[in-house]
Amino acid sequence: MATKQDKFSAGAQGIGYIYQPRFALYHLLELPESISVFIEKDDDLDFVDNEKNIKTLASLKHKAEGERLTNLATDFWKSLRVWCDRYEKYGFENSNLQFYLMTTNTISESSILKYFKPGFDKSGLEKSLKEQLTHIATDSEAKIVREVLVKFKEYEEREILNDFISRIVIVEDSPRIDKIAELIKERHLRTIRRECKAYVFERLESWWNQEIIALLIGKREEPLSGYEVSDKMTSLADEYKLDNLPITWRDIEPDDIDPDTDNRRFVRQLKLVNISTNRIRSAIIDYYRAFEQRAEWLRHHLILSSEIESFERRLVDELVRYKDVLIDDCDDIAVEEEMIKIGKKLYKWAEMDTGNYPALRLRERVSEPFVVRGGYHILAHDKNSCVGWHLEFKERLESLLLSESIE
Image (cartoon, rainbow, N blue to C red):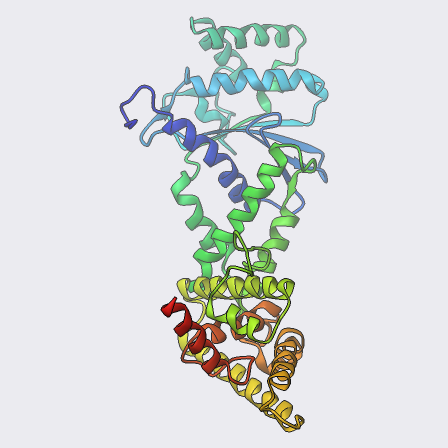
């Protein structure tokens, strides 16, 4: 196993890759909504302000705690080398670029890099930043520094070196990877109930990472905008209001669905009234989604067990009432064929009609059909429940279990 001292460890590099999307989300939230971001395009992050026609290239550096940024810091000169290339690519002094080094380091007090901090007063400098940087580069033997020095000399000949240097900003003490989540929750999830903030951030970052992946692999061409993030946060916040619940299992299906070999109690209930294989398959999906969704709500303390119990009592009460209506309309419920007909009608009602009953919703705005449909299947799976489709389901299921145990 790689350790912190292991020269083959990729831990720091791995943190850097994870840091980029998380920092991009955090920083985009700190900026006006109209700004958009690319990842790994012209720099680690490209922030695009179309309204002001400014593109900010940000080099991110997540360093070990306690490190200081000095005059010859490799991170700074590597960033300069990248920025020189982009400066040329986009038309030198005619480009709309700004260059930001955003580091978790602090800048050494003895370093001239402190003059690149945002808003730092440069009026008292004895020598210009251009002169000081050129002097530092001239005295260095480092390859990357010498490469930048060549560029500086070219820019000086063209009288654009001051323009290039004036575009550089260094932001020290950028938040570390393990602090960003708390910063986002504190500053940007203020409208979310406190007990839900961690869960909302988890879902927000999951969505964000999927969009970043789409951007990196080319499935998405447009940058991610502040407007999109705001819209997503608004949507998530709405799901966590007291009359609503987040639906996260809507599009998920279990593996290896096989109605023919599935012998779970709720599936056997459907087979007793000759429900088709395709509808049983749908029932298995509804059961799975409802079961997993409930477990997630409970795990994140979004709902109480007593609320689910109340919901189930309403499901049972309404089913019993409708079953009694069907029995009243039947001439002879002792005939097997009639019992199956009643069971089919009862299940069709539960499958197709209950979604139109606001009184059956777990909460007022929880209208996803699988919550109610799956709720009935969960009850049908409980051997102590009175929910079943065949009028003699308890006796039939006991008989089936007995015959199987004998075999």
